[in-house]
Length: 397
Image 1 (cartoon, rainbow, N blue to C red):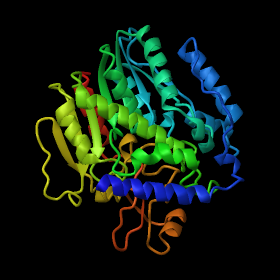
Image 2: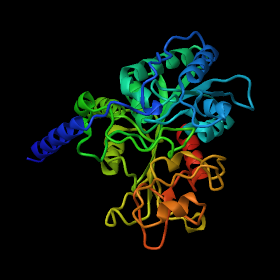
Image 3: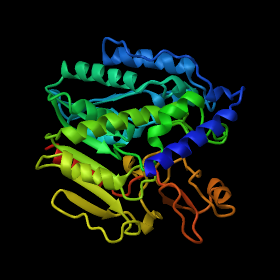
């Protein structure tokens, strides 16, 4: 009965949305017809091709062209303290994001002895409109080719991913026994939105479910709006990895970190998957909670650590989906960073104006509210150093 109700809602919604289709879009929301970068001879060659791709097809939000390109460029960081590199890791960003998602973690892992590489998924880095034609199959192919390249250069290959990227790397690792372990930040295994399975259908009828205001949502390191097809491609990655995890147990070391207050993911389902589909004595799940959402639930055991996400000294009310990634010292997203995401589901009168005007704010997951407090999106992790130490322990560094 529930599934029938969901289907009915989806069909009605799709019909209404299709009727509202507009003919003229902002340039930011139109496809640039950019061909994805999938053929390359080396990582340096891949970077060269991607830079040309970005310069040719990106809708630049400011006059700071070099900064915008740099924020979306795939990058490599080599270990600083050793010449004989035996371990490498590829980090894959999430839907609408960029390689900048891993700027802090990449440096931390390089300090621990890894050769670290990030990649840019097709449809990303240029303009949200390019996601209209993006395909998860291209994302899979790009990852496969980078793994093959890295295998030729190091002895042991690991994979890491954020959100949708977590789906891609987990799915790949379940099929390739050579992958030695996983680092998963807010892995997007399952959405908490019941209508997620209908996104591929909706994409046939409507390019955009929500467009936003391109001029207002400036962020050089990620899209602030995503077309329907982007959600559809995310769902495909989720559907694939969920099917795999139902049938296969991953036995290599795995680190996962999630937030109870994540506004995007089904956290209970992901915790269940950690317990049932990942089996290694070094596995670790970091679980952030401020104790308000699932009050009766206890998750502590040898492989699961629950951390209080309420951090008053940094005005943090709870942990967000993306906040897990970044150090408080990050120059763009950190405590004193230049980027403040005020589009956070605020309902209080004047809240957004106070945030955008530089007034005092608290930080939280999307949509969280408290009386007499204005919340921006949490874009940093107060426990970043603890998280890195746990990753290093899981990977035996």
